[in-house]
Every structure is written in C-alpha cells, then in structure tokens.
Image (tube, rainbow, N blue to C red):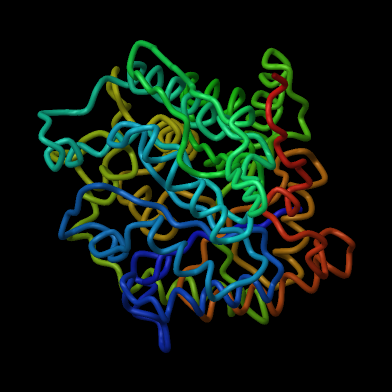
Length: 429
C-alpha cells in the first residue's frame, strides 16, 4: 500500500497544537523539515502540502498562517533524498505556463520527486484577493481545469529527451528538432510555448486530484495519478473506489494507473482505552464557540442560524465543496447526528475518517480496506506533529511491513517509482 502524510504544522486535529511537545506553527520550516524526515524514515511515498488563497482568523490554526506550497517543497527537496513532495496550486488563480514551469523546475531540483495537486478553489474569500467579485460556478471551474491540465502537460511535452547537446567542438547547444511550440488556442487559454525548461526527470510530475463531484471525478479519471478521497465507512469506500476505477477505461487507462488514497487520522495507544483517552483529551480542548464556523467550512455551505443540537440541514442546490458536503451530510443523516455531533467529527479530522486503537488494530483495519479494494493506500493525517506521526512510523508501519503490505526500503528514486508508475515518455512525433 501507499502512504502520504498531510502536513499541517499545528496538527490535523484543530487542537493538536495544544498537545505536550507538539509544534505550534505552520510557518516553522524546521518543524516541517522534521515532519518530512519522519515520513521519509517511515518510507512514505510523499508528504503533501495543501493550500488556500484566503485567511480567516477563526479557521484551523494551520490555515491562519502557512507557507506557499511550491516554495516549501523546494526547501524540503534539499533536506530529503527519496520521499515525494506534493503541493497544491489552483487552476482558477494561476496560469498554465507558470504552473508548468514551476513544477518542471521543482522536478529537476528534487530529481523527480514532485506532484501537483490540482484544485479549482471554492473558498469564497479567494476571489476577493485576486481582483474578482466571486468564484466561477462549479462546472465552469472544472471545464477550465480540464483545459488547464491539458496545456500544462502539453508544455511539459514541448521538449524531448536529449534536446540540449552542448557540443563544445561544434558550438551546437540545442537540437532544435527536439523542441517545439505548443500553439494551444482553446476556450480559456492561448499558449504558444515551448516551455523554457528541459524535459522533467519524471517526464511529467505526478498529478493529484481530490474532487468528489461528477466533474471532479471525471477530471481525476482522465488526468490524475493519485486521488485523495473522503470516506467514513468501508462499504461506501468500496463503492467509491470501484466507481472511480470504472471511469478509467473510457480514457484508455487501467486501474493500476491511479492510486486512491482515503484520508485517515490515526489515534494510536498502547491499549484501546489509552487511544480513546488521547482522542478525548484532544476533544476536551475544543469549544463550541466556533463550531458553526468549522462545520460551515467543511460542508461548504452556511449553517449559521441553525441549532447546534438540531439536525444537520441539507446542502443547498448549487456550488458547494461536493466531496466533503456529500460525505458529511450523508453520514450525519444515516447516524441521526446533530450539528454538534458533526462539529465534533469535523473538529477531530476536518471531515476525514478517525481510526482509534492499538497499532495492531489500526494495521488490521488498514489491511482490510486495502485487501477489500476500498483503498490503494492512505493519506495519513496525524493529530499533532511530530509525535503522532512518529508513533505511526514506529508502531503501525512495522506491523504492515511484517505482513508484506508496505515497503521496507525505497526501490526507486522518483515519486513515479514509488507508485509503480512508468516515466512518461515524450510523445511520438
């Protein structure tokens, strides 16, 4: 199976930073370098840096202050050797040439270890920071994203291998037959090219996607190498897994070409009781003062004005963060949860799955999901850093290694190697 770690310097639990010995900043390079070292020691496939383009003072502590992700993974590439480095960049507030150039540069700097997480951005505060009044509607954002990814990949393909000759005897520097323009003219973009960077070590950096709507799943099926999913139960995870894998054939792709990684927050104890005590302690630090804000943030629609002890209101029609809103609302409806119940769930893991227990029980559960085709691995969300990640590396990873379910050593040098993916060759001319 595959593992990523979702890096939030203050911990993925909203109150994780209050844990004894936990890091308290998402703007502390030394702390994040330590996280990356633990993950690499555990032979994780990658570390992942999320992003948002607006700040709210009552948000998750790691969302209040954060590094720009591509800058951060450039720094991490210099203090790690094997682990992959994933960063989020929005297709709604960027240009394809800039993104193609940035990730080509990062792939060279890291010797082939980077991934681009493609997002379309639904945060209502983002457009106000980019001279706009509001986000484009959902389907239009995804139409733009489809073309955006095509242009980025096209720019990566404007160079063949071996284009730079640098023959000192003849004075020939560039084999111009191996570089070409793109000449893209589409609905959203006009990009001539070529890119001003040689072909990436991976051919193409790895593409990550996490959209849960039909448009998001189509984008993932068509373009992604890794997909993050939001699930709470084995049965629904198996259904979602099968559904996405089935979409691949229409794009000429096989199930092995896309890895699906649900998010999971492991709470690890020497006993079941100790694990529950840890979760209870984390939860005890929360207050209901910003409950509605947190729930609104994860649901993607406003629930202010509703009773915390009343039922969870249904999503309105229109533009919401589909993956979280759908999964959380359906889970709340099935379990007859109140808004307060949903707040507790959201505060713990921001809507993701919380898995609480001994190392053996956690390994058993991850194995069950993996062997029953509910996941190809997991995006691990430690409640606090570095301790909760170190516990997973030291206690859970050896259990999985002993069962032959996880690598003991890296067998390749690139992120594509870690996922068993081939280097993307230049297109036939």
